[in-house]
Image 1: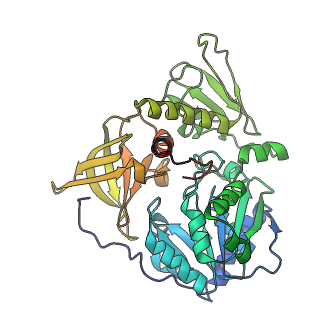
Image 2: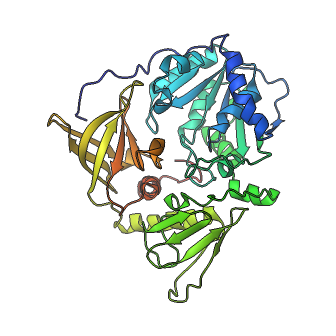
Length: 430
């Protein structure tokens, strides 16, 4: 990787035990939203549970952190946080116990940091999905989780929250005032149980605990959402029309999701169910979905077919690239091109001084990728590509692409090579 020389974030700096004077602050900042959403926290097999232990949490919204803070208070914890969370506040986040991570990288330094947390007698809080769920269902989990838990040799606890996605979905962060939300905090392995379990058994149990569907949860509890813009942004996830099969021409407004190619439209009900507004008689192969995750998985199946046929490629997209080498600020790296196909991601460009830069991430090394919709409300959709020393926020131009499709393709290409090598693809595991 070429590019400008920057001071890099010090990933090896030892984790800080939460400063005593900041511990009341963390709970004070968390409680208002926990109370507002009347969060119900159910604890299972946690009698006598004391730090140190590993807490694995699902990830749907920032509310996840606040509920976890309430569940473990007043115990000390260290949270694994992506580097963009540290921008402009590195000292504060370090002092409340945050550990920096660049997403979807094989980071031995992080393992050392987590071992230090356990040695300190604290709680290691990890969000193993490493991104907000795109549609309120389980994102891919790293296969290394089982090995990590076995290495740390302390209780393994999961916290699975429900209602956080439908309250504030990744594709439209408006607070929909969902209440009550729910969470289960479950000790799934004691140290003795962990010692006698294989890595595969640990992974299997974690995967089992991480099965959730926020839209099914909402429907089962009859929690109606009357926010008038509840469908706005959903086209970021549901980018392909199931009626005419056209990609990248879906749009949304108010309670409507619609295809600009064929004119089909859907209404999103207060229970987040989709209903087709018009007949699809012109399209004999048309399908349609009422359950949002079903539509998303249909898109995944279509991407998988492209990958297996060898036809998947974004083509050469014009992009601009921002770099985040440290926690100070984003730096415009320059303009260039990006290609994503079965070989992986390739970015090439030239900075404002005329110097070339490039990054290549082989597909076999990347089990998933992080994406953003309308990043920070002003920068548009992007793919962020990580090495151990830098993060590039790569913004494609035009409209014949969807970062959601790139995310799905990244996972399906990785699975494709696993199958080619005769390695099992376990549900929920990379």
